[in-house]
Image (tube, rainbow, N blue to C red; front, side, top):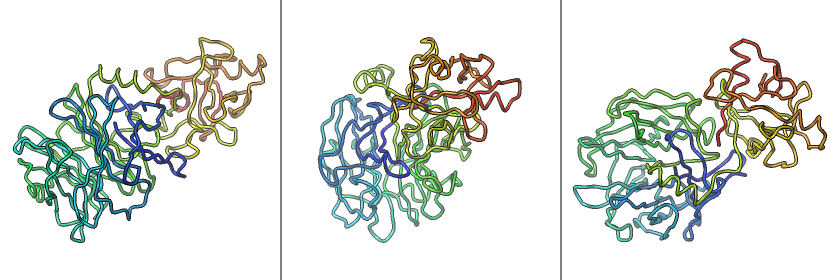
Length: 423
């Protein structure tokens, strides 16, 4: 997955190229500690909306909007382009696509076999309405003149394409109602999708954008991702379907997926297991985790005012939710929760709420801050954390506050004490 990052107060904003990997396309691990691996060297010296294309020769092309921050009045006629054989080394250029006095937003690319060329598709407002334009190229260096590609008669943004054997699918955001729609065409000719919309429109929250369509590598399952911006900016939603040609997308629970921290307007490309290993070896794995609640799966363990709690993502300061699960202070076979932004402090409990406190090097502190990691009490595929001081007590949340309490057979308390270790 390629992304840029933003957080609610802006402390997580970064307009470089961020990469994450996933074995299943649902649970994502940021590379390079969630820092950018590349930052554009020209134009606005920042990007939005990065897109990864696997080219016909097996190498990669990355293209992105030439924009830094949220200044949507920018009118760059360029996009950022990187050639890469392996997503580990890159060659950069600044590529001009048109002479219009308008933006060049959310560029994507696909192979048009009938033309034996790549199509670069993007959003532009040329005649008072946002529509999709296209330039054709063989090398992402020299491009054709722009052509109008998709204009259904109302403002659209964020087009993404899936090419099928007999049918092609274009998903987009409608400005009219803030929903995601799909259009289809048997050809890739400009204008052929204009009357091809076949879905009834998908939305979660108040408005959504930036669709991504990807297929599971080992099944017939399709996933459609969308990036919410009303009421919460930067929250991903996912739908599932067994038929991309139908209108039967079902929302996934947030138990089933997790987005990279602070990620915005992403794209997804399939890679091999070997390539994933090579990327991890090159860019490294995070030195921290986030801990997701089982029964409130939009919420993560954090500290606030030195009290442990869970809160819905996204929030700032986002480092409050980053933890190093280190060998237990009192038992190296167990774990302790070391704060990333206060590295001399750990979660501990002495009855009542769990607090974030400085390690005073006492045996009592070390015991209070140490938990055995065991199969989840509500789901054995998740995790529960048992106190080593009192093995009948587990870390749980009550009214969003973390506690260490005895857990009986009640469904709610077992769910309160079940978590997932993610990024």
